[in-house]
Amino acid sequence: MSNTTMIKVEHISKQFGSLKALDDVSLEVSKGEIVCLLGPSGSGKSTLIRAINGLETPENGKIYFEGEEYDKKNATKYHQQRLKMGFVFQHFNLFPNMTVLENLTLAQIRVKKIDEKQAEETAMRYLTRVGLAEKRDEYPNKLSGGQKQRVAIARSLCMNPDIMLFDEPTSALDPEMVEEVLEVMQSLGKEGMTMIIVTHEMGFARTVADRVVFLEDGHIVEENEAKAFFSHPQSERAQLFLSKVMHQ
Ligand SMILES: Nc1ncnc2c1ncn2[C@@H]1O[C@H](COP(=O)(O)OP(=O)(O)OP(=O)(O)O)[C@@H](O)[C@H]1O
Image: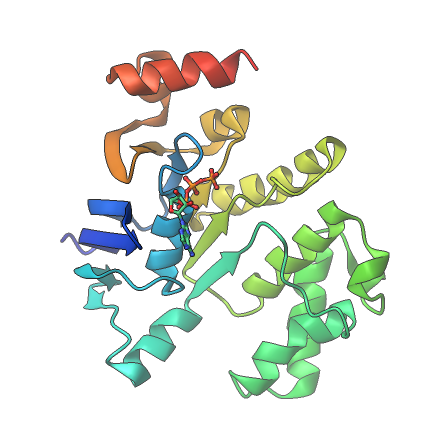
């Protein structure tokens, strides 16, 4: 593992009943790298990113984060490591009974023990960053899907993560709202944020990804630089996938 490796996934497998969602998957992501996980529906993309975050527990294999094993059994260390990973869900997962500002300050105050004033300053900095400072006192049900997702991204950024994981962040959005979220993600990438992104947005993946990891049936079928992947995918399965999705 080089000292620029941020995430190392080593031979993980995850089974749901008789279904092997991930089968002996290994992956490394370097600091500052943007990796898109692509593949057909049910190929294991979400399971992989959720396993990296600890939302799924693989039966086999190991995950390392910033050079140290990421293991629930080592609870204190695991908790500290997990705070350094931001996770953005398809369905935003905002707290509906709290204002936007409260959504952004809650974990800072409760988990990081930051005082309220400072937590609010940080929240406002990131809300401004995603273009939503004026929504600070709104409740999530008053926001559009795109705005909710930008709030969710700002909430993750408030925790000062070293890596951001995105699980289909635009899949639940109306088409006209997709762009505003992708723009925020793209600007994060330009600032050097390490990101792993599960997406069905091929145009976006092509623009922002450094590397593409293509999965099918719980396996990594192909790993390639994004440019090479989109111009000359090596595997027949990736070729077939791209020819289908690019013509949709
Ligand atoms: N909690 C679960 N219980 C049972 N089966 C699951 C669970 N989560 C995922 N699966 C199954 O594991 C397989 C991989 O699912 P996963 O969500 O990782 O795929 P995906 O590539 O992200 O798909 P999509 O693009 O449709 O979101 C699928 O067959 C799915 O039905």
